[in-house]
Length: 136
Image (cartoon, rainbow, N blue to C red):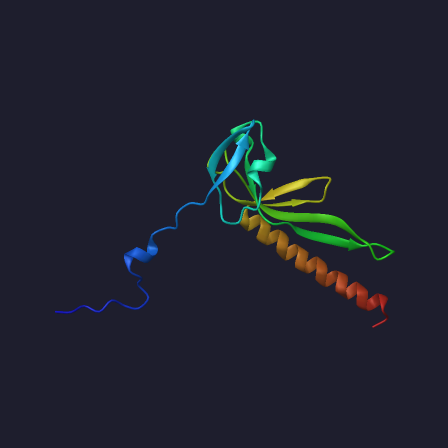
């Protein structure tokens, strides 16, 4: 008797996780190798942290720029994916860091979703204000 395997079930070989990405880092001048998430863009060698527990992972920045009166752009806030490498399992979970250069927040994914929804609402309110300012 032949049993057909449904198309949505993948062979076992394809569920094997990819090998971890190993990258060099400097800790107090000594080169070591650490596991690094795919999204991490930090240069762990250039950072040369003093202690192993000081190594953190950071992703690409998303900048919120505010136009000035002369057309220049000023950084108002930035966000990036970040992850601590030491501490409890909870502390090592990836987070979205949002920083306005005065205060920062480290948001878990659900919190970041709520914040992003608030930003969309904020943008919609600004667009409505622009329409009023334009007399429309």
